[in-house]
Each structure stands twice: as structure tokens, then as C-alpha cells.
Length: 130
Image (cartoon, rainbow, N blue to C red; front, side, top):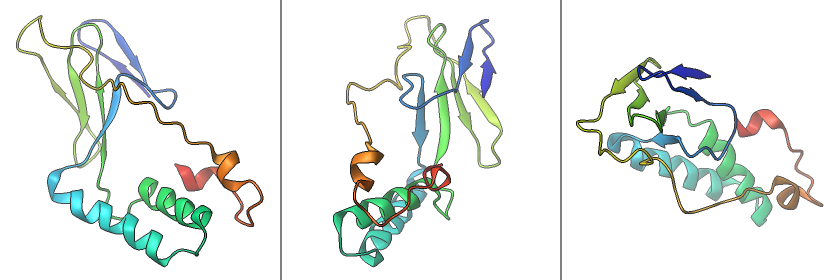
């Protein structure tokens, strides 16, 4: 995906772990989102591998469509958020001093699927994680 910002900058959604992208979960969806994950883990197999697989499958394919993508232009600070129908809405900063890295995180989490599935009877399918 490519977003042409009003300021002339281009925001590219081409990979994971982007500093200008985040996921928004409306508060009214928060509890149901986590309930689905916990229920999937509870109903999955007994091994840690099977439980992690279930959690990640539900987290990425939630039946309640709990989350939406959001992006921030690192040049001007505008924030783009998908609304409920998937259309991008734009929110403009009130001043030039607005933080342009609101969506960035100092925390780094890596998900090593090879380590999780090594020696497991579970087959890893790329579509289960998107």
C-alpha cells in the first residue's frame, strides 16, 4: 500500500516492523479481541507450540474485525486511520511541533516461526499469519 501525503511525502506499507504504522483497537472491541485469543489458546492443544499457533492465528484473523491500520507521515505528522469501512481518514496536526514519531516504539519483538514450529507436527502456512 502507498499513501501520498498532502505534504508530498509518500508512506509505504511494504513490510512488518514499520516505525510509521500501528494497529488501532477501538475500546469497544478490546475485551472481545482478547477473549477470542484466550479462548483459542484454551481450546488449542496442550503444548506451548500449539497454544502460540492458536493465539497468532486468531490475532491475525479475528472474526470481530477488532483492529484497523494507522499510519503517520514522518515529515508533517499527519495520521491516517482506516475507518470501519476501510477508507483512510486523515488527521492533521495542530502545529509544526507535533511529534512525528507517535507510532514508533522502543520495544522490539521478533516472532521466530522457525523456532516455534521446529520439530512440531503443525504445518506452517503463510496465510495463517496474515
